[in-house]
Amino acid sequence: MSVGMDAKRRILVIEDEEDIVLGLKEAFSFEGFEVVAAPTGEKGISMAADLHPDLIILDLMLPDTNGYKICEQVRRRDKVVPILILSARSLEADIIRGLEAGADDYVTKPFSLGELLARVRTIFRRSAAAIARPSSEIAVGEAVVNVEARTASIKGRVVQLGFYEASILQLLDEHRGEVVSRDQILDTVWGIDESPTNRTVDNFILKLRRKLEPDPQTPRHIVTVYGHGYKLV
Ligand code: CA
Image (tube, rainbow, N blue to C red; front, side, top):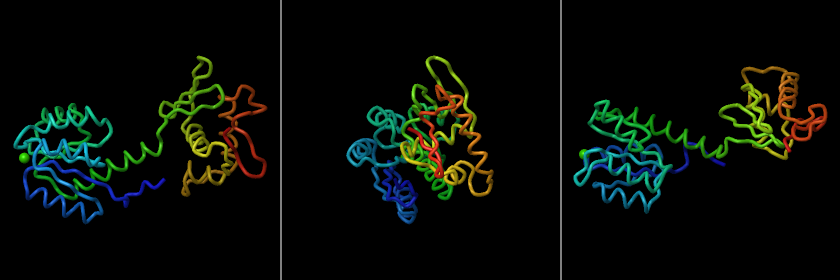
């Protein structure tokens, strides 16, 4: 799946100040985004529903309503679309209220275009990562591993996994049923700069088996494919 920054993403700007809309259109189009704009809250709500934007940039003081209400309305229908509030209201209470209404980020006016672009890129990177990893649970036989908590529960018993154990398991799970070579594991989990030996990988595989396999001596789920690598089945 391509999750690169170059994919054409649609940004809906709900904002009544024309100068700001023009500035955002110019800057974001230049960066390869598609920008659509709504000058009122009502129009914004309908465009959000019809156009399925990848991100909403929302002003708080709109001619017909306030942005908090728009935020809540959008959230009722769409729990996922990132919302960034762009507002002259800079009090902490305003920011907290915006985030509680369901916004993901808050930038105060006057703003720097560079900072806004950076924030938008961060939001897209986060959402791309979440899409690439839809499930944070991995089943290994009767064990269920929670990747974020790095815990495995096996018949009511819970064991903790180390960082590298969890990372290796996650990689094997992404290629479930296929062989993953030791080099692939080293490159993905440790990166090019830090390179422990193949032996290190084998040791972590042994640890994983001790924690997750019913009989670690004769593994049934984290299996060795001789001469090639490991496979999760
Ligand atoms: Ca305004």
